[in-house]
Structures are given as C-alpha cells and as structure tokens.
Image (cartoon, rainbow, N blue to C red):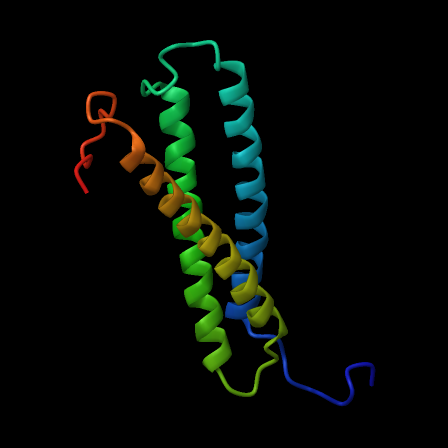
Length: 130
C-alpha cells in the first residue's frame, strides 16, 4: 500500500482545523494587503485615525480571523488527542493556526507599545493610561 500499511483514517476534526488554518492564513494576507492599500490611499488625509466604516470593517475582520484561528487551534489539539487516527492534518492545522495567532499577538503588542508613545492629547483611545 502507498501509505505503508497504515489503515487509519484522517481525523475529521484535524481536516477541519487544517481548512480553517488555510482560510485564516489567506484571510490574514488579504487583510494585510487591503489595510496597506487603504493606508497608502489615505495617507494625505489628516483624519486617518478617525473611525470610518472601512476601518471598522477591517478591524472586525481582523478580530473574526483571530477568533477563527483560535478555534482552529482548539480543533487541532482535540484532533491530536483522538487515538487511532492520522494526525498530519491536525499537526499542520495546529502549526498554521498558532503561527497566525502569534502574529496577531505580536501586532497587538507592537500597537500597545506604540500607543504608549503617543502624547495623551493626541491619544483618543479609551485605554490610554496603561
């Protein structure tokens, strides 16, 4: 047999995790591209930081993508626990989902560090004193 005599099936949860990981990674790349194009397009605008429908939509999609990545990570962990199933899709799903989640965490940390450098008068965010 091509699979070395391994008659185990792939875990459905592992496959779901892998599909979520691919979608999450592609969505992350598209969001980065769209965000960059929006910023380049509006760099001359003095009110760039003003919440517009486009900025809010991009933000909501980033959050939804992060949640999807965390769900994919949980599914991958569940798939790795299941016995007598192949684990390759679960491993790939876990790896890609964790990569996307760690990138999001890094972006949030950098953004929070950047916010600390903005003087209070210019910082209109709710949580400005941390």
